[in-house]
Length: 153
Image 1 (spheres, rainbow, N blue to C red):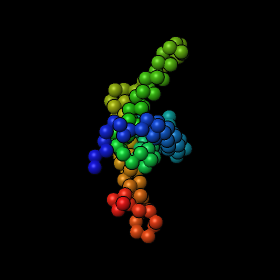
Image 2 (image 1 turned 45 degrees about the horizontal axis):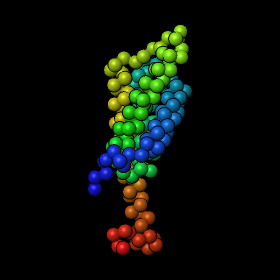
Image 3 (image 1 turned 30 degrees about the vertical axis):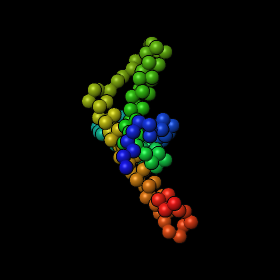
Image 4 (image 1 turned 45 degrees about the vertical axis):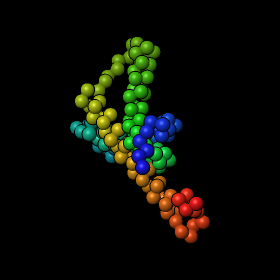
């Protein structure tokens, strides 16, 4: 069964997955700062920031995939691309609303690494979540549970 169709993508699950991913990323990054892996004195800030994003988007993807069940790859890609939409909106707000504020951007290679990491982690998380939900559903509908399978009807 192939469920990878745009009609199977739920925008609500994508936004929820993205919000969970950002929350977990922030929590992990804060933990890295507390431990001293990320901060002003750390020589490997970019690597640890990308690691925090990978962990966060893996969890956010899992959260979305567990609820969506269908189109896990498209859900994961949409979660990763939501970051681009938010980035454009924030840049417009900074340019239009705060003219005197200096805005420091990322290099092109760092931006690509972060976005690709987010997409890959979200897709992996969505796939794991959808797979886990399907396995859980088959466990709950087994013999002796009182739940009949649709194929039996």
